[in-house]
Amino acid sequence: MARRFTRRHVLVSGAAAAGASLIASPAIAQSWPSKPIRVVIGDAAGGGSDQVSRVFIEFLSKRLGQPVIADNRPGANGVVAATEVKNAAPDGHTLLYMVGSALMTQKILHKSLPYDPNKDFEPIAAAPVAGLPLIVNVASGAKNVEQFIAYARKNNGANIGTYGAGSLSHIGIAALERFYKAPFQAVHYRSSALMWADLTVGSLDGGIASGAVGMNVITLGKGTALAIQGRNRLSRYPDVPTFHEIGGTDPGLSLMSVTGLLAPAGVSEDIINKLSELCVDAGKDEATWQKFQTAGSEQRAIGRADFNRWVKEDGPLWDQMTRALGLTPA
Image 1 (spheres, one colour):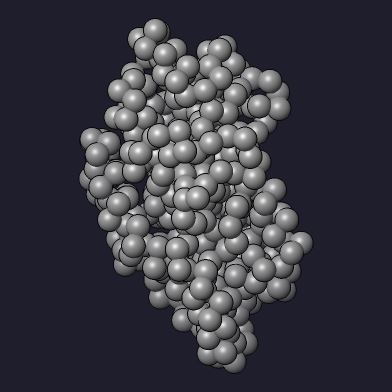
Image 2 (spheres, one colour; image 1 turned 90 degrees about the vertical axis):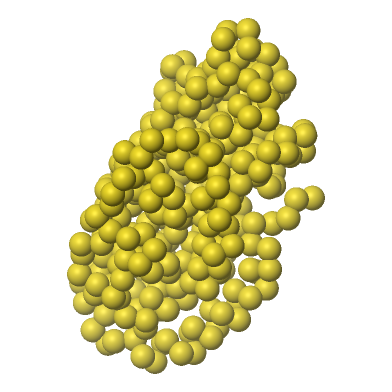
C-alpha cells in the first residue's frame, strides 16, 4: 500500500504537541483572547477547505471561551485572504485558513504580492488533504479512466474543472495530459463547491476536487468517480482506485497537500503554540474527529512542527510541479 501522507510525522507529532503544551500553557497571556477571533478563509463557503476549517473553528470556540468567526475571502488562489490577514494586527485575533500549497506556490503564479509568503505568516496546524477524486459527467458514458481517455480523444478534448489555477487539482489534470497523452482542458473556479455545481448541471465533462463535496454529484446521479489523485483510497470511495494503482506513475497523480491555520508574523510564540496544541486536540477528540471525517478528512490534524516539516519536505516537489504548468504569472 502507498505510504501515508505524514511519513514519520505521526511518530513525532505527539511528542511535539506535548512539549509545546508544557512550555506554552503557563505563559499564555491572561488577556488572550480578549475578543472574538476571526478566521479568514481562502475558500468560498461550502468548499472543501472551508468545511474542514469550520470543524477547527467550532472546536476552538468551545475551548477558548470566545466566539471564533469564519470570514470567507476566496479569490486569486488565496491572495485575497492572505492579504487581509497580513494587514491585521498580530495579536492572535485574526488568523488565516487556506490550502498550504497555495501559499507556497504564489510566488510562481503572481508577478508581485503584497506580502512575502515565506516570512509574513507562521504555520500553526494543518489537516492533511485527502486524495481528490476524478468525477466525470455520466453523459460521457465512462466507467473507468481508459474509457474517459477514449471519450476525450474522440471528442477532441474534455474539459475538467479545478478549484483554481495552480491548485492540486490543476496539477492533476496536467499530469493526466502528460501521462495518458490525452487532450484535456482545465477550467478554473474560485472554489470546489462552485465547480461541482457546474458538473452537476452538465457544464463540465469532469472535475477533480474535494471528495466530500463531490459525493453530492454522485448521489444525484450526475457523476461517476473513476480514480483518486493521491496516495491512498478514500473511505467515502472504497472501490475507487488511486491512479497509481491503475498504473498512473506521474508524480502529479500522487501529490498531496494540507489545509492549514496560520497566523500573521509577529503573533507571540505562546499564542501560536497554544493554538497548535488545541488544533491537535481537535483531531484527537472523537466527536470532533467524526466531524472532520464528514468534512472529508482521512487523517487527523498535525501540529506546528509537522506543518513546518511538510513545507520543507514537500515544498520542492510543489515548486517543480507548479512550474511545469507553464502558467504566466498574473
